[in-house]
Image 1 (tube, rainbow, N blue to C red):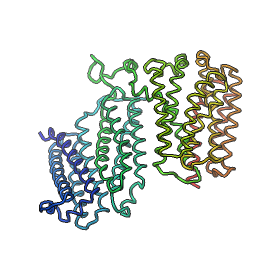
Image 2: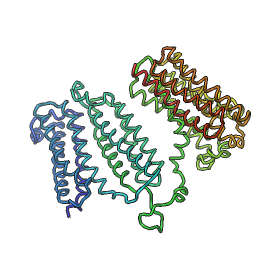
Image 3: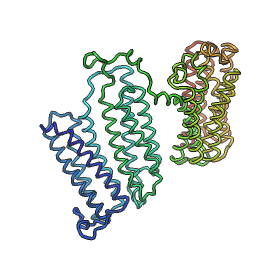
Image 4: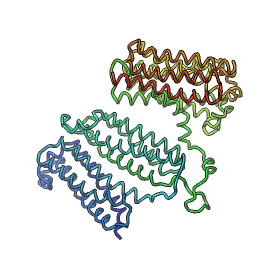
Length: 585
């Protein structure tokens, strides 16, 4: 039956199209198309003595012919398989039409000698052909799930599917950006439609691929296929970064890897949407999902445990303040390449300090409900291994910051590691109720890192950014301490509620909140920010003070949790408002 041949034809077509793209990248990198002015046979390769460039162009055209034949066969099989699923038939029917358009673009490139201007459109059509073959191959390989999800499970599944498709789109843009770098004539008009900075395309794709992997681990960690696919997509994306160091004339060699990444990301997105969310328990009827108890029995993987040592949720807020500081300096918007490496170095530094903190605090964490399940106190990772991991990340962060940013940024990044991992963790946290006040300096350093990574020097505005985060820290953490004060008392940590009581803590929260809001308003009088930021700071500060007032006057759990949660949103939105203000003005 024709339907039985759909899947092998879709796979064969995908591989042939991928070979066409790889050979096309080599043709672009070596400018071999100019060696074959005849169309379509490239008779120059058949006449001795033929040059290697002519043979390369001939091989590319032969692969195009093979891919076209397979595409037509796939379309014919799809036409004769009306019972097949729509997403298995329609793309295969469209693929030959796109292939004809690709061949036509190649003919125009050769006949009119518009090699530079036509290369990107040529690759774009080839990527669409690849998509029209990869999607049916993935659809036919993975039957659609039959269970119906609801509530949180449905939301998490939609979020994962959305991230996977956004990642696929970003990898397509990345493949086109790499093709643009391979073109020898940067004045080609088509380049104005593509990202000017291929490093930015790598950064965006890497960020989305990381989010997909993280969401896959959170919701589908038991599914080895999905987890492995998400990891493979991330690794393929990150691998593109070193290729950007190649000269533009040889960057076409990476186009094939970009196409492979595009196909892998598409396949992952399709499988993610169709694969069952839950595995089947032994002895259960087909289609009956595993209950929450079975899910609770699963232990986190070793990879997830090591990732958790870096405290990614905390780092995400630190990186927001770092990135925002980079975009509000007097030097103007930084290159995306600099932003990417500053984010990588910042994550390594904060993650290394967090791992060292986990190694030191195992005796404290085991006595607190919210930390007792961490890898070190639960015994899944030893303190020694956590310490080695933290030191390795810290050392790597210093190398990254020195190599790709500025010496001053590397200094502040290293200072943040020492400040948090040793000064706060080993001394302040265990000895004084001022631990959060003085130790808040560690979390306030990231804006300095971002600022100096761009400018190489400090300014009053940068110091004020430090002060804002510094004074934000006590209200934020003391709100958490009010809720978890029994845990802190059991662990022997002298947090303010344990030492001075709830009433004094609520008053201190109000005082520090007032100082925080006042400091946030100083950026406009100093000339660092404009009226857009001031309006946002006033509005968000008023909400912050309302929460702090309710904590002082009422002191109930709802008010305290409200302040704690809003404080996270407040700091992120405040720094976003700075970037918006600078962009508008």
